[in-house]
Image 1 (spheres, rainbow, N blue to C red):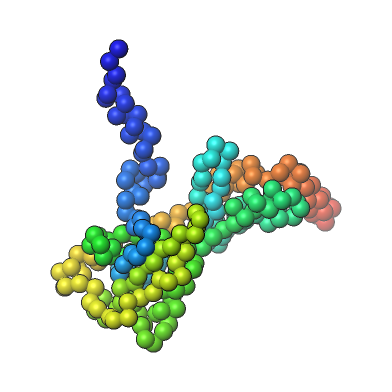
Image 2: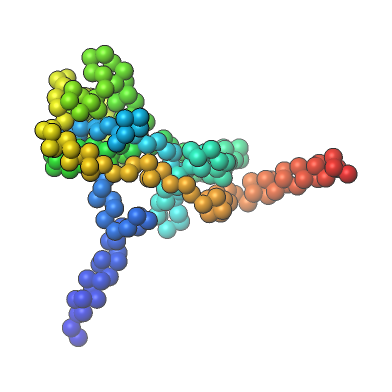
Length: 242
């Protein structure tokens, strides 16, 4: 029996398909940092009064099948966040397993910015954690560097990625000492026209969906205790109103 190659290609495409809500290939817009030295030029915001970065916090939720889902913390938008409530609730159980889960879902700061990948010359989205972001901000507050995003007198930034086990370290990352133009006038114009909408990446999650995810994480004892607390509050309010 001959193998249906077309069917196999379709299945392969299905299995390797990116799951981003923005569509196939969206992940290609992000800069994938290689181990070793990665040189980028951080670009300014599109408008004069806009920040060069977008800020969010991410909850990483591990499913039973091993899949990992990232959820933006609702507190970023000024709302209450069930996953944050679950995080604090897990620490109160006294269980080591629950502490491990709490550490996994802890909201972690994430920063998005547009950069020129000096290796390819493409404008990419750089997603970094707080350690690398602090290094960038510290450089900009240092009078020896100033605004590293300045198109004419800014500095390229060397991101040095070193692996320690399964975790990356960026301790040696720093701006290049010498300032330089981002590129020629035509190159700069093209870069600025290619800026990605980094602010749209900080999406607002559906509250009810996040609530269900949080309830699935919490042990039954915690969920029951929360229900009892709510009942006590409702009973108290009823007595006050009678």
